[in-house]
Amino acid sequence: MMAKSFWARSICAAIVGAVLALGAMTPAMAQNVRVTVNGTPITDMQVAQRLKLFQLEGNRTGQKGATEQLIDEAIQMAEAKRLGITISNAQVDEALLQIARNMKLSQDKLVSMLQQGGVGMETLKDRLRAAIAWNAITEGVIMPQIQISDLDLDQQAAGKVQPYQGFDYILKEIIFVGSGSGSRSSQANSYRSKFTGCDNAVNLSLSYTDAAVIDVGRRHATQLPEAIAKELAGLNVGGITKPRVVESGVSMLAVCEKAQAEDLTFIKSDLRANAGNNQLETAVADYLANLRKTAKIIYN
Image 1 (cartoon, rainbow, N blue to C red):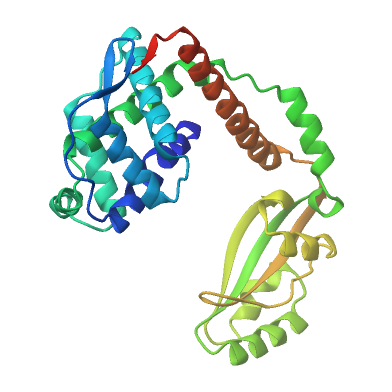
Image 2 (cartoon, one colour):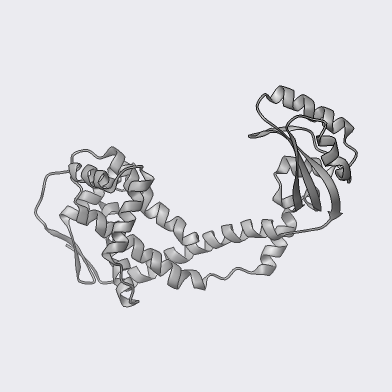
């Protein structure tokens, strides 16, 4: 999942935005070599096309930025080759198709728009191939090196638990189904005033039109929206929340059981994802920086 976010930033943001705004590209120019990276040439034409994409994206790093990005891609492809990672044409075609789907276009329409804008398909495919290769390196080589301490996560999570999040519940939802939130709310408030506990929840609902009782089951407070968790914390067993308008009608939650219980699972999951993403970003940047240090880069 973390690697997927890199994929989204490196491909969709650049290409989708560019396609929507593409204008005429610069006229054809001689294929002069601007830079050589480990023996792989980067030409004036490649730089010009990447620069045009940068301009459309609002990237102001200019020719230097475009050139450096192409250098990075050449280094990434060389590293993929060293690791025995090969990217098939089918993978690149699938990436193109996914971009078209994200834009709600057919692939032929996407290709046509790019070609009309002067972006050669091989240029785009090279960009995609490098991104797929780097994604594979990220998943296969860099991610396994990420170490996240469970002890640290436990300590951080414990520090984030609020008093209202220290409960475990068994809940029932009483929902008054249908449109007309005013009349539904009126019935819900009537039900709430007569509610005496979960054992009689179903029988009481039979006195009302379109009222349903649903077994929600066990929920920890950290699984619930903050406002609901705070309200439930103030209720005893047999209590019921105030009516809330939801998509299907008007809803209330009844407390069938309540116990003090600290569950850090969901807080830890969020912390783990954030910590993993932060560490991965740093590790990916360091990995590429080290590759650049050892690469033979010749500027012409």
